[in-house]
Amino acid sequence: MKRPFVTLEQLRPIAAQYPTPFHLYDEKGIRENARRLYKAFAWNPGFREYFAVKATPNPQILKILREEGCGVDCSSLCELLMSGRCGFRGEEVMFSSNDTPAEEFALADRMGAIINLDDITHIDFLKATIGHIPKKISCRFNPGGVFQLGESKEGFQVMDNPGDAKYGLTRPQMTEAFRRLKEEGAEQFGIHAFLASNTLSNEYYPALARILFRTAVELKKETGAHITFINLSGGVGVPYKPDQPENDIFAIGEGVRRAYEEILVPAGMGDVALCTELGRFMLAPYGHLVTTAIHEKHTHKEYIGVDACAANLMRPAIYGAYHHITVMGKEDWPCDHKYDVTGSLCENCDKFAVDRMLPRIDMGDLLVIHDTGAHGHAMGYQYNGRLRSAEVLLQEDGTTRLIRRAETPEDYFATAVWD
Ligand SMILES: *Cc1c(COP(=O)(O)O)cnc(C)c1O
Image (cartoon, rainbow, N blue to C red; front, side, top):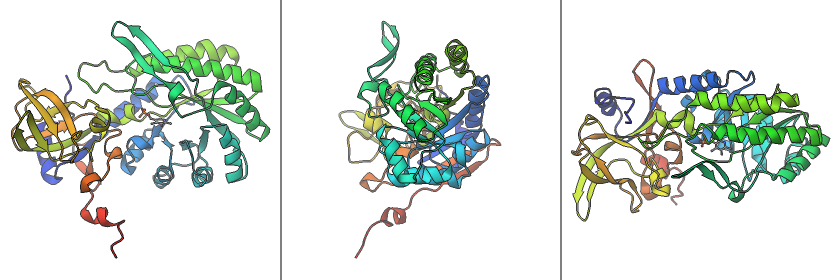
């Protein structure tokens, strides 16, 4: 069963101070989870998590993660600028972008970030842009085909389609790229791959690690490149549904360690540092979208209208994603009412839940929509003249702090041309 990280008693005064809807983040949960990740990979001395900024681009969240030893994974100019303003410097910044504009490579280079190339043609593009090839550089590998793991009667535990993804270099291109980069003066090489998203299996990272470790051994033989880091990127998921299994980060770390001992160590590559670029796993469970029930409607279905909408959380609207809902104070009531829980956009996909069994909802009830800490506020938009909500941090001592104010109509009008 999924429980919110706050009780109704805790939430009432918070909702009295910050009008709903707002995103609430659990600092204690974020820190403890980051510490578990570092413990799970403590066997690898160079290990570093580069938090995927796109998941939760909030400076205060980035600063908390920085205190826990994380770097940042950026993919755009604004993410680089925000990270720089939060104090991330040099190799604390991974720049894993694609279809990259020249000015972004230039800024990443000025910051001393590690640049992760998405394509072989970007070697010349980067050189033309910044005038040289950095001494330390990474390439994103896409093995193509279909990636699947853990076949059972219910299907595969993990299934994704790298062959259809726009990212990365093919295997022969990896060899050619490493040769070229070496000729251009690169001295330290990294390999990156992202093969599946939101995986719920302790086998994903170990399976990905095996592919990358074998590829690293081959590339070293073929090109003589000195491979100093391997980037397992993101993709470790979280159980959005209450009946889904939770990943065990210690089992994941141990699985990767075994692959490392079996493949890299015998090849004389036992000094390779590992890194990750987790987003969802770092933040999703530690964010709630808090909203109030403001309307009930009885037509062909039973509807509960809330004051949040897809502008605050887009995942259900754009890919039918499940987000668990708790009616606060009614955690132990029977789920004997079937509702569609809707936002106000003039789009029928603006539903946080469809045919969801929930306790009876009364007007004014506070609802928590779970697992919105990653790809939640970040994906917000202003369609229909709806504004993005505030972000509030629940600090370790139980007090709260506003870490992003809600947008106002003035923000909405700020870019318009009036005369
Ligand atoms: C989105 C992204 C991540 C983070 O993915 P999660 O599924 O949130 O862990 C990491 N690396 C890159 C390059 C990405 O685009």
